[in-house]
Image 1: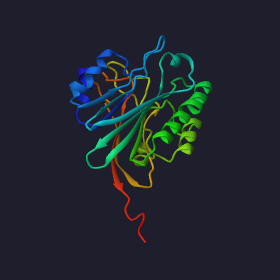
Image 2: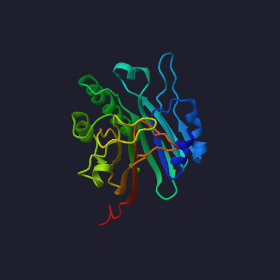
Image 3: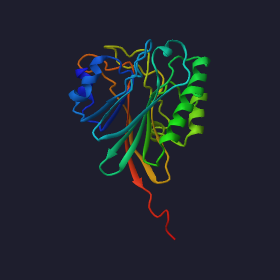
Image 4: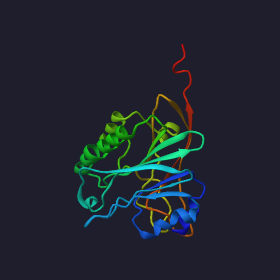
Length: 243
């Protein structure tokens, strides 16, 4: 946890998944984030959603919607869509959606990702849409150009920030080789994303997109996934009502 906290210190907003362990509550303090929300929805059988947001900016609103469907061992955690609105000093409100989709790679789980995951995300955005700059991120457990990815891109006008900057690079975020002290393989899957919802009121520039934490920290990999990083610039669209 100390290594992860050290690695997170240079970011403005961090969205975490699988933050199940009690010690994750210490990440915000150790990494110096003044604002944190750790969504906890313990049930009789299920673990919580594991969603967490660390922010340099005040968190002014939160919400959560569980998926209406699950598959296999994923049913042991109440996965869903976590929403947080932060107050940026220049932009004003910025909407964040954090998620963790069904993990298994088979047709049944793929159907749940479409029927429960993509639909829940679409419905949550409809619920909170105020045309603020909007970022969607998380462990989607879907690979580019497969049916779940195509369905998501058809439902919502999204910018895939990695693809916007690196259309020809795979951008793997999960490989068989990632472990406590194993370096990252050159083969794998891209299943973690940062998307931006296109917006008529704000122009989005993807300044940079990268894969972070590809090397061990204090002798250990911080996660079994790599971190997806995006540097984004939002500019208000002017002249919409000009004659």
